[in-house]
Structure formats: C-alpha cells, structure tokens
Image (cartoon, rainbow, N blue to C red; front, top):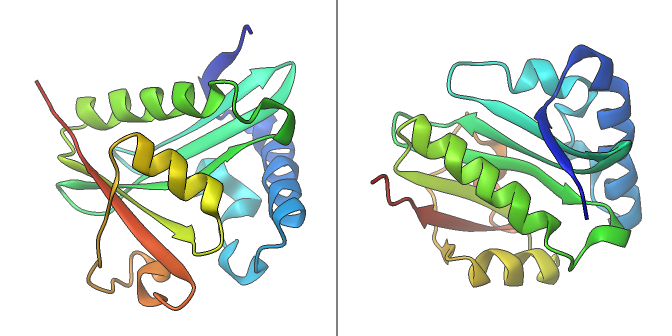
Length: 159
C-alpha cells in the first residue's frame, strides 16, 4: 500500500471538507461539533499545529494536531476511510502526528472520542493512550461535554 502523507494545501481544502463530512455522515455524528471542518487548513494554521492528509490520488485519511497548551497537543479529526480501516493507515497517521508533536516539544497528546466510537477507543488504547478527565477548557469545546465524549492522553517520550 503506497500512501502519501502530506500537510494540507489550499487546493485540498474542499476535498478535505467533503472527506470529513462523509465520515461524519457514515458514522451518524452530531454535526454541531464539526465547527472547523469548512477550513481545516486555517483551523490548524497556528504555531506548533499541523493537518495531515493521507492520499492515494484521493484523500483516504487525515489527522490534525492543535496547540492546546505549552505541553499538550490536541489530536483532532483523526479519520480513515472505511476501505482502509484495519490496514495500518491509522497507525501511519498516528506515527506522523507523534513525530510532529515531539519536534514541537509537546509532552502529551490528548484527544476526545465519541463515547460510542468503540473502534477508535480500542485503537487509541492499543497504542498507549490512557483515559483521563480533563479540566474543561474554552480552547477545547469537547472537554466541556463528558456526557458525549471520553478523553484519552498519551505521554510522549521526547528523547
């Protein structure tokens, strides 16, 4: 499986939006939490932030990392198209995000996951993410909704 992992570019914005909305539609998620999908490039444009696309001509996966605090990167929009699930693409995206996070001197990656997204929860637990209860933060809207989301964190070994 040959896959290109690259940072989002202006030419990718519409296709990335359609890709993400397609995942949300497939999984029946509440779109009130899809606030930044219309311009992923802009949403992930701050210092120490990145939005990656996995491509085989078309987008087949994506992942973003936001600057939550000096020590914490917030993993967002981590999706893989159905035909590529269980084939190592999610792990490839996660490795790229972890490498980026380490270069930015983050100590921890945190994330939120819908409570009923069992496949994602298993994936993150398998790769070292632990459950935790974050302090609610205006910079992380989902952290204020433990009724809908569960939260995971991964301590990075920055050697």
